[in-house]
Length: 259
Length: 340
Image (cartoon, rainbow over all chains, first blue to last red; front, side, top):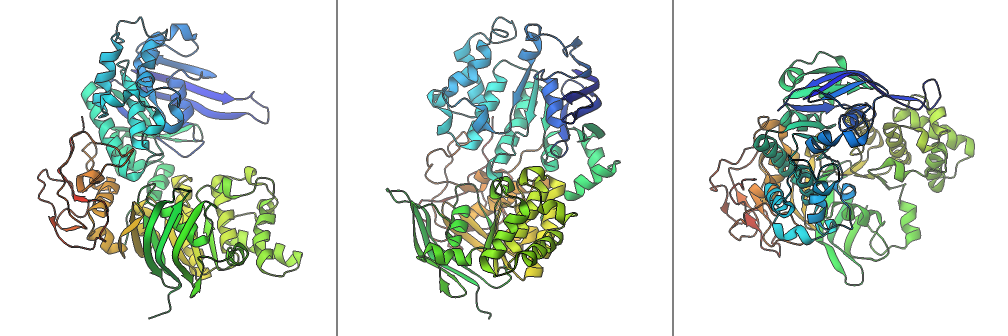
């Protein structure tokens, strides 16, 4: 699905004082149907990496291929295929949903995008699709005429997920989808994500600082630090027998219930 | 029995002209050096409880009931009298160190301010004490940190500075409101170890608010479970995790134990155990409406620790358990609702 080869992202000009190497020579292969988790502390480059995968940012060096097509360095108007197939869910549903739009309009907004609306794989019957995705995330259809502030945090994240599902994507990229949520609703949203990924055969790329969440949802894990991949592999293998010292440190720091 | 350090009795807090009550008369007490965790979801009243004890609530808040520290009543004290206690006998560590620190002042001056407000010290001695304290909270280069502005420090360094401010006067009570939520896991682990050591060194009691049950279990010996402005359960960490009495606590414990569920399997949710009788505004509805049998309090029972609901709703017979009679009709857990 994705082939990322020797991707580097530098902010600021090289050699200047404000220059930051956010992602440093990263190569990664994501196959269809995989559920890949990316972990690492703040500043490790995980968000920069997924932003480049979603073509929201461009690498300063290296190439990103999506389904056999080069997507890095291409102009926006040529990215329709990627925009339709890859959707994002962000961390904080309070800031990722437009407060002045009704929920129904928010969810169907991607369907009205000029890049997407004429593509055959994107549903054209907006009302029908709205009903479908709202049912899929367990929100009553009657709520489509309400505004985001009328919803709880967990419900807002469901709305964000419904919007991501609307254009029938193949890849879902989620950036810390549950870290702004209460523990009591975290389980609901994780269950929902798991169910949807299974039901629609989605490829999932999920960034989280919570190793337990990654273990629960993802079959592959990528450990990042300072812009580089420290370790990558099947989740059970990496968690059961970590190779890199940093992975061991991360795993040891996971709070466990002790008494 | 030792004299309790803090006694809270029938504490009620209401906000605004309409007097919307958010804390419905809670009572608990803490002994010296005791560490008590407070868990519950956002909006359950955890932070309001902390702020009410500290006397830091906004002016539109109405507080009634009693909060006594060393036997001295704090409710109704003048702000000047409270200010003399804050930072000296009791102090608070907030979640976000960037907002807790003043961005226009060096960290050293901020920590010294807390010291000088309560003690008459020459400047040089105060500076010396500040540097000592910054070293004590594990900052490698206290002189550089003291002369830095908050923005120049990392999140972990900032939170250590906030801890230094909270502990420099060796208070008897430290209230921590989600002190590590904004930190990375590795930094969090280090800050928690530090907190543990410093609380011991200062011989301070700690009221520790967190939504992370694992952290509470590591830091505290006792836990209060809050729900909709009431304390629904109060017990030792072992009891809360091994034999939770209230249905809501059972749900919270089960849902927090990600490690006990096979990857990819359905996680138990709070709603599997506890049915919010009357759906208040904005409460998430998980699909099918569940029919919880109305009862007050809790069910004794099998559901307990990390057990995934097994399908049947035989969990917990209605009983008069530990539940305080809450006004809203609480119900026992309905069967697991199937999502999607």
